[in-house]
Length: 414
Image 1 (cartoon, one colour):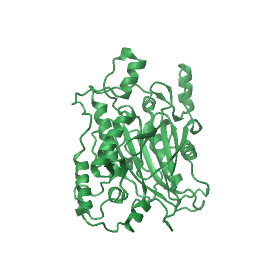
Image 2 (cartoon, rainbow, N blue to C red):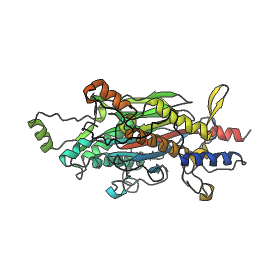
Image 3 (cartoon, one colour):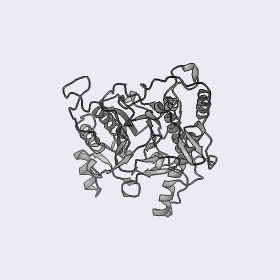
Image 4 (tube, helix red, strand yellow):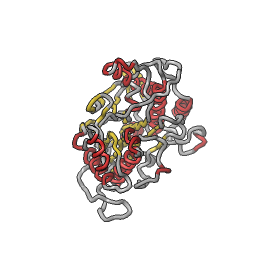
């Protein structure tokens, strides 16, 4: 973020061009191999399916499978506990206590179903660390902001005065920029959050395959399709390492900054870059804070994802190129019987991807021997700093996998 970062340098072994999978990922691959060697069973899709039930297969509906992985910059990373699995049937709890927050530092994330529409809303926010100098916990803004967006999405379209859903009464499809605006308005009206700010990358994925994204600042996303980078976001910055940011600036802080010739950085949801995309079966969208983008290039992320997808068999290498396996359910759904995967009961393809990216970003941030994107930027704009290696920061990753369940259903009837 815009604040000066003190990096604790530690010598680490250089990362190989193709990073070996973690032990958990290898175990997951072996589990899938055993599953493919046995006759297929009728697997319930309720746990992670977000699409409405289909009356016919004439119109494909996509379902979305989401997981998050995260790590605070001053804490060691544990992929077995620093993980979140999205279940659309869990009720959203608004205004979580600090104790119940994930161990993600100033970074925050949310995932929620959008009412009963079959859509999913999700996003990441990176609290501005510079507020620490004013005695403000940056996590209060970013986590509260995400909590408000989650509860807004959850109640979208339901009865407005229904206390069980906190319904909005809205019937129009929810847009990412509107969701960002509602979350920002709610955090501004929260008397417990007196100051703070964050970047934000917010998205709404509809069951018809439309993906609506609003990105403000230097968090962002990348869309991968068939072993290639399909599209990605560009950071919004006022200057190097000074991203666009949503802010609450109390009058006392504004007056103090004005007295010393400082400038308030306060952007708004209307300033976000809004893009719309079409999703297909097997597409992977990675949303992340700058702890990832400052340490990994897009091609690094593609290599990580490709390694996982091909090793697990979710991507098949054919003479005509890469193909997505028709049935992604065995990959994206947790084992119903813990004995099937005793070491990783809730391991899924989306959680493996999120963990592998988080682990790679964490390692790169501590590596002083390999220059990442942030180091390249410092060398370009501030060559006198002689900066090399990664940038230590909080890291938060959300992975969404799109799945067309009608493909598997059609094949099973053949």
